[in-house]
Length: 201
Image (cartoon, rainbow, N blue to C red; front, side, top):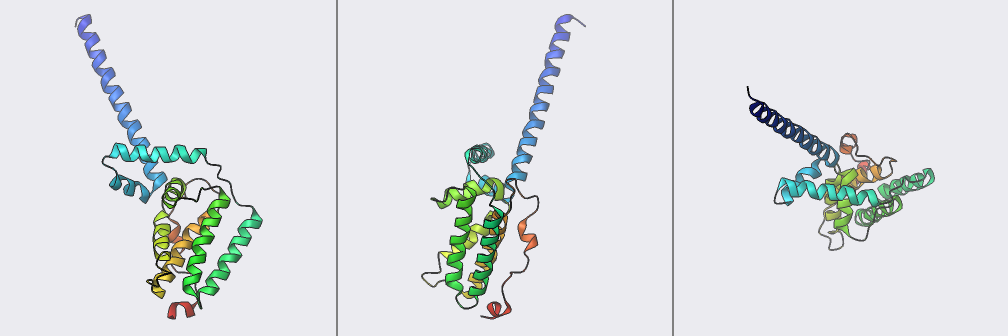
């Protein structure tokens, strides 16, 4: 075998190895994004024209998130928020609409205290998706129901569902972690913490 042939073989092997390594790295990055964003990964994929654009969007969200000063709540703040939520659940029995509206405000306040910008709802979703992608659909559904409170277009059952959805994200916001939760939070909340009276309304 000539030296030229050996060189071409070496080049071919190097190219194949480079392609293989690149493929493995791409799969690892893709798996990391899928794990980090959870269901939000597929949602972004469906919203973008290509997988590359979708993953670029998610990486941009990660970069923006890294610039935010997200901090845990103090123990006193967590206790205050938890007590406020317990009061809201009691109020739901007699005033479900106002309770849901206040739940939306309470979740937003907890976000702000953690350091999340809260001026724009779509930006809220993008920022939350980096850590709370697995439960972000709960927040979307709850927020959509809360918008129907004022025109009285939401049934009591809708409002009960909204409280359940808000609670999933709310409890995650009270957590200290700034990393994605490894398991869906809804698995811990199969039943709402509302009274029997509220379910019969």
